[in-house]
Each structure stands twice: as structure tokens, then as C-alpha cells.
Amino acid sequence: EAQVTQNPRYLITVTGKKLTVTCSQNMNHEYMSWYRQDPGLGLRQIYYSMNVEVTDKGDVPEGYKVSRKEKRNFPLILESPSPNQTSLYFCASSLSQGSYGYTFGSGTRLTVV
Amino acid sequence: EDQVTQSPEALRLQEGESSSLNCSYTVSGLRGLFWYRQDPGKGPEFLFTLYSAGEEKEKERLKATLTKKESFLHITAPKPEDSATYLCAVPRVSGGSYIPTFGRGTSLIVHP
Image (cartoon, rainbow over all chains, first blue to last red; front, side, top):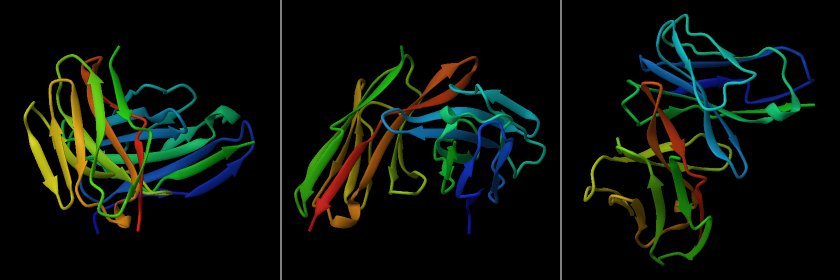
């Protein structure tokens, strides 16, 4: 089944403890991206990657890191999480940046206390 | 500033009661407008992409239309399973790339 898989689905952590949210797609898509979704603010892009080793900032990149060493994987790294990073996170992929039919993962609900 | 505004924020319908959701945008050089459906606790699911004014696309009870300033998602004779949040988005130019700007969504509830 074609899908984007995120792990974990739920995560509660403490301020300052480094964490990684994994994202993997099995569709051979070139374009991958991360979003956060907050009530009243909608979906906002954090980082995106147009291909292996090519990443760039979205609208809200502060406090996040990403890497794209393989085509299928695009992990999101929070080096020192803070409570304002409590949110619902989605990974998405598509054939290319111009293909807007993104396939989204099921989401990761992160709580930073 | 490029913006995407959806209205209404919430909509309650009776089963069979047709209606429309609105997505208005202010972006220079439209390069497409897309609609997604999002169920509670799940990721958005792609519905349509529209590229030019006058274009229409249909899927089951949904029909999306596009003008130069807005898009409508028409829902004909909705069923309870159409209950979801509907999101629209447009890509905007940022540093040579395109970043999608999403609206805040319309939460649709269809009562049986």
C-alpha cells in the first residue's frame, strides 16, 4: 500500500530532551516536507526537501532540523524541544514540488512539558 | 501578503442539504489551488487541484470550481460520511521555490 509512515503517533517529552520523529514513504517520491498544525493557525510548513541531500526552510523552521540521506526517509529533529513546539506534526510527500497531490502521514502528536 | 481565507469556519447540514464552502486567495501568479479533506486524528487527504479560472473537477458528491479570486467546493446531497474538515491551499513563491499556504479549514458536520 502506498503510504507515508510517521513514528511515533504520540509523544510526551520534557523541555530540552532531544527527539526525532521519523518519516518514511514507499512511493519513490522526490519531494518530502514537514508541517505543524495548530488550532486557529492551520497547517504551516516547517522544512521541505526536493531530493536527497537537498533541504530548505519553510515558514516556521526555528527550533527544528531535518536531513535527507535517503530518498524514502525524512526525519524531523528537535534538538532542544520547548513547550511552544507542542503541536500536531505531519510529514507529506509528492512526486515533485510542483505535484500538489501530497500524500500525508497520519500525524505525530507531540507534547513538550 | 499572500493569504488564503476559508469560510465559513464551521457548517452544519442535514443529510441531503446541498451547500458550498469558499476559499478566497490573494496570491500573485496563481500556480494552482488544491483541496484536501481531513478527518479527526488523521492526515489530510488530497481531493483536487485546479489550475485556471473556469476549471471544474468532480468527485462523487463534491465539485470544485475556480475563479480568479476564489474557489468553491460544492457538496451536493451530502451524507454523514462527508463530515470532515476541508482545507484549501495555494503555493506561493518563496526564494525560488513554492511553499503551500493553507487556509484554516471549514469544519463540516452532516447530520443524518
